[in-house]
Image 1 (cartoon, rainbow, N blue to C red):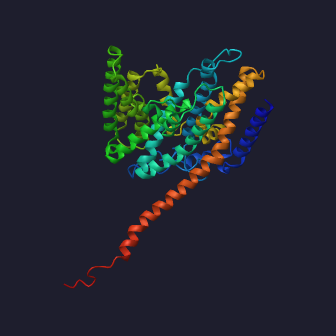
Image 2 (cartoon, rainbow, N blue to C red):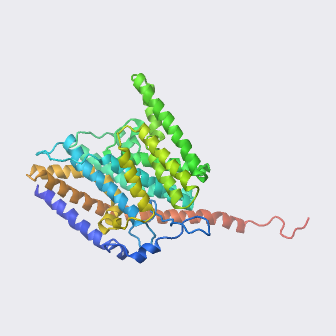
Image 3 (cartoon, rainbow, N blue to C red):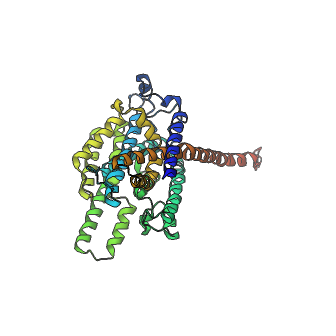
Length: 432
């Protein structure tokens, strides 16, 4: 046990060092000043004579949030942190109690993790549409997403192979097929379980990126309201039809095929992304606000009509209101330094907190720690580990790959120009 204590102390101390010295000076203030907030309002693509909200690049596909001199809406960063902390509390209390069981049952387990996922999907629809529609560079968007997502994801998959192989705490036994399926980030589509259970949402995210890229290449995002309303009709008809078929023909082999179609089109969650995407149109002053508002309401109704997890419509309305207020920079209370820091490490924290955090909680319980103390120490460990991976692995790898992608693009653009300069003109004097 003393070895585990030393490991936890090492992780916490290193994370504090990383958080103090890796973040830029502009992010080491507790609150964003009023002048800084004013400088964020700029560059939203709109009509030239109309003052509009900014196009602030807030997605994970952009360079690391610790870089200075970037225009960001800190409220949206804070929402990402809130969503991540919601999942952490859910997994360390409700899921842990039902899956592993505390030595002393706790009085309250937080059961609302699904609302953190709901908020995150709406936020993702907003910020990814914001990035893609402002630049309209499908290749850059695709590469930035892959560079951002896969290195850390593959690291957590490899770590889970080791955990499952050598620690009896985990019942799942690794296999080559399970490992290969998880490397795709979409194991559910090919009949395998996620080695890291939280990453089922990553599959939904990747499928949404595919939907965005396909819509951009087909020109469907030029009319986002019409595109999303057609998509909502498809979601409603398909999911309702599949549910009806499964109810009356539960033994049919077609149920599996229909489930794959639902997953491949992320039909159950596309309405949430639609709400965020249409909110971005309102925020940037494109299209009729009343019509876009109706589209948001329709998307919310479709989501609850096909929902299988019993989300509360009132909670959906409150979460969307929080997202809308943050998108317009109207909730300064969220510009809180700890939330911004958690947002910086949110992806690594999301990937690594569950299995390792539950293991740490169990070890502290085994030496007699009360459940809530064990949960607190497990949370500290998860934040420390997420900080280390963010500052010492994720960000350096992302910068390295982005630099090479930029050089590769420059070489591609330079090659045709050099060919045209070197090729001789067939008739330079225009003689017959």
